Length: 318
Length: 254
Image (spheres, each protein chain N blue to C red):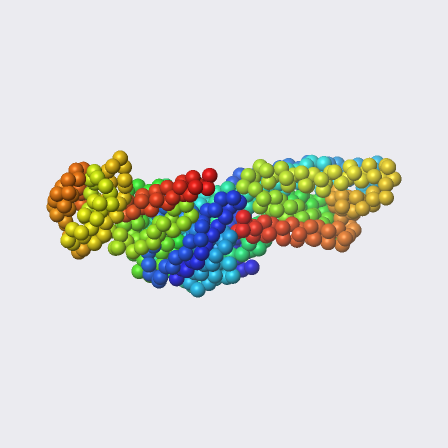
């Protein structure tokens, strides 16, 4: 449904998006995760044809954003960040206005409006003035507006920003429901949101893709964290030869101590065997823990690795 | 172009849901009232044979100073928010990510501004039937029609200028000031420069007279519908709208 190839966007001297590539299949709900200023909104603005990319291509529903912007727009429903609305219009009037602009045929307009009002639970405010609505209702009006022409693709920029916990749950439930008919790309900087709604996550850091994987692969990754004093390579060798260990990586070296991340076959809990192994060799054991890598860890790691390599590169250059 | 009507209707709704439209209407109503008083006063003196009044429409509309001052203030006030406000509030993003072209947006905004311009001049029409039927002053309808056409094309040009400056900024005040400056040049500066050129007997004095809006409208008011003026207005108008569309399109590549 969405295909992005080596997409870049440059604002003057700032490279906001740097050659990102990804594809999203029909019916997927993909979360675009990243810190503020990582390039999420810019990516979405390019996909919705609001901005033109500096280089690279992207096609939505088979139409290129540069060659056929109007066709792309027909297939995309977009909820911009902060939900800009005309403050003087009423909810129903606004939805009717947008339905007309989006070429919803006259005969279907009424049912389309009633349908989105019902889906987004806007019955109570249908005749209220948009400028007087609370943040939660504004967000829902934006969502209703995005799906009024029943698009194949929904692009939602921070759909739950500024909502209270109950509204967040409602909106998430709504997005999950929409996922069976629409392809959804949503952005957020809240990790738990991705876990609650999305099937797949793309982490963007400094305009580049730091991670792109199914959520299922990310959550079930138990690993053993081990810290010991001694020669890092020797310890690593000893750990690797322990039966049942699949992979050992050194995550940190400091003052003669080293931290390792141990992956085991079949996610077996080898803490006791590993402890024995280390102690037998006379290396003092400082820490031993088994943990599930959460999405948050992966996010922080992806983002910090990205920035530290950036710092390194700058050092080498300077 | 099928979205233009929908967009224009929303734009007009926005005008009448804020006090702006009513304030401007009130101002023009007051000016029309005073000018009509003045016209009737002069006409009654004319009947006593004291003054001659060859073109009453010019006394009533285009020859009066308050009318031009009001135009100079009202046109920027009407056009300043058209695109600048959408840019400030971010609604432009919702407008240009649906199957609507930049041209449709610009034409709709311009049309809404133009309609407000016409509505703004309506108070002047209100008094004329009284003069014709009540006071039994059978004025010539020809100059009235040519003045209406001339003021319309002039309005098209002015509103297009306003829409253009509104597209350049997200600050309404800046848009209004630029529009005011340009209209000021068209209305007053051209006339002053023309007077200077005539007094210095410069060769381009005639060219300056041609672009001076005051002179153009004076001509329309006497019943001469000069197609050269009309085509000048229309070509500036189209050019300005074209530039506005280009401004909106370059936003994508910024």
